[in-house]
Image (cartoon, rainbow over all chains, first blue to last red; front, side):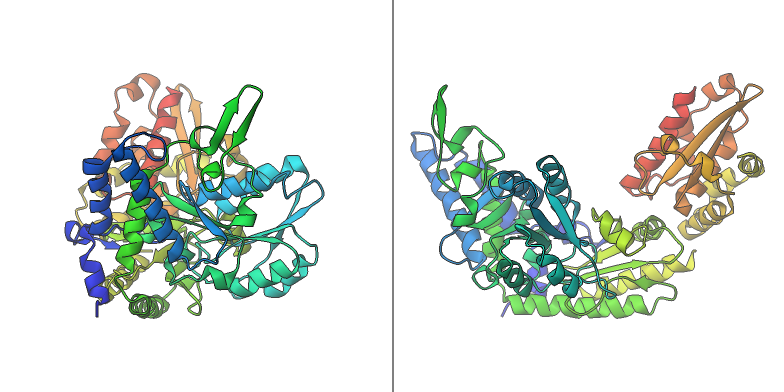
Length: 401
Length: 137
């Protein structure tokens, strides 16, 4: 059976940078050889545009592109009557949703429900589009464990929001949300449900038939795939409700100056030439992942997380904002009274790659009353030795204050 | 701000000390101690128009001229950048316009031996502060 060490061996980055410890996986993951080769092979041997051209090369490219769609779609264990729309990433998908529901589903006087731990990409598009339409945004707060306050969430559902949009995993803290229950409650209240899976997609196997949300979004580059490609999964009936954000190219059936007929799904929501190589690369990432037992990878990551968490707890002065239970592999911490960027600079000196700041989740950090945090985020290719090096570097950094 | 100007004028020797320090721990220890010792700017000066964009942490740079001499004041939420900018200001505060024009502030920064070590966003913060300083001249 393939191990976590076999997994790591497939990522050429580590051989190129043996002196670095990469714990910024929540920002982006490294790419296995299979993904790099797939993109290269497309440009070297297969390059053609998809769907339109009248030649055999384009038919081959189209067939590979649509096969990639099926691979990525099926990876989500989707219910029947669902589809996968290619996007540039989670942010692009959330912008399509916020724009696409205005006026079609959301009308003046309606409410939507977000949570205090969302990434800016799941806040700002809603703010910009809701305001001119006169739609109110409710925000479910955190509880004392820095997790979603479930009581408050259920109370806010009593306002009958038309849309509930929340993250699968908090990018700032790593906490995994009980999305199956949250989706069920939101649906019972009559809402369309959107799950921001940017961090959730790599947290273990998904089962969207079970979760039963209307939409799920993620970015390829956090799943070992290329940047600039992502997916907006949706139930077909829910996708049909969306007004396209972008117009032109393949999303159209017939155009005249008296009127234009839009194409069917999924093309209607994919204007312009898509990121073909990116889609093939993302499908290659999914197929690569499927060679490994997800339980082996997740167990290894949890072992790393426990070691990192306990190591950080033993560094005098550090305060951990993340909890260990239901955590997808993120330890966010602060040195009280000090700015997180100072701690990150001292880690950078020791070649420990982390992120510092508010991680595009400013409302989360204001709820936590912190000016930000240092975030260490794990992937299954990380090692015990790397975790130990990071803890030793943290100890060294803290001693310099 | 006068309190800070007086403090910085007493730090002239720190520039050489930081630049010559080969041990990164000692170098950063010096910068962090300096950052901690720098008297804060009064809140009245921490205005939005004095915020330096491009810094990872909030940072404010202000400038005044006294008898033809230029003085800058600086504050930030983070210590290391305060130490870095104080070290640079120790070399340029109090100079006249023609004297400042002779000085390559980026070369001064390079002499500190930090460019390799500061992360891009933080380096950009330093670059943004240096740019703001040059805009005065």
